[in-house]
Length: 287
Image (cartoon, rainbow, N blue to C red):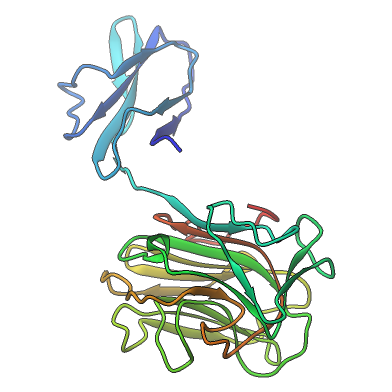
C-alpha cells in the first residue's frame, strides 16, 4: 500500500481557489511556505502520496477569495508503517491474506457450524493453529490491534488461549487473550519484561451466547480491551517495547498445546502500527 496522508474538510461559501500546505517544519500562517499544490474551489478532500514513513509533517489547507487567504488549523501528522500481520477469514481453509502459512494442530478444522461472515469459521475443540515466529508479530513499542470473533459454543472448564505467543502457561507472552466459557470471562495480557505482566486484567461475565467481537489495542502508553465494541480495559502502561521470543503465534492454545480453548474463532485480524480502537465502536462483521 502506498504511503499517504488523506485529508477531508468542510468549507462554506464560494472561494476562488484552495491551497494545500505540507512541511517538515512548523508552518507559520503569517508567513506561509509555498503551497504543495493549488486545488480547485470545489475540492473537499486530497490524498498526498509524496510522504515518507517515519517523518513528521505539518499540514493545513487555506481558501483564497479576492486575494484574501484564510487558513485552517495546522495539524501534525506522524507517518507510521502500518502492517497487516495476519488476516484470516476461515471461509474454506487457513488462508492468511498477509501471506503467512498456518498449520492446524490436533482437531482444529474449518467448520460450517458457526459463522460471522462467509458461512464458516475455525472450530477449536482441543486443537489449535500456529504460524512461525515473524517480525510482523514483534510489536516492540509500536501500536497494535488484535481483533476477532469468538463463539464459546463448546463446553469446557478453565481458561483457554484465544491467541498467544508463548510455549506454556508457565511463560510470559508479549500479548495474550484468553477466554473462560464456564464464567463467560475474558482476560487481556501483555508483557514488556518477560518476567512480569504489564497488563493482566480479567473481566467476568462479559461474553454472551453467540458471536462476540473482541479487540485488544495498544496506543502509545495506553492499553485498551473491548468486547462487542464496548471498552472494558483502559490502562496506562509503560512505553517500553513488548518482550520478544521465538515462539509461534498460536490461536486456540499455547505453543505446547496446553490451555486449549473450545469454541469457534472467525475473522481474525492483527494490525501492527495502528490502534484501530480507543473508544466504544460498532464492530464490522468482516475485515
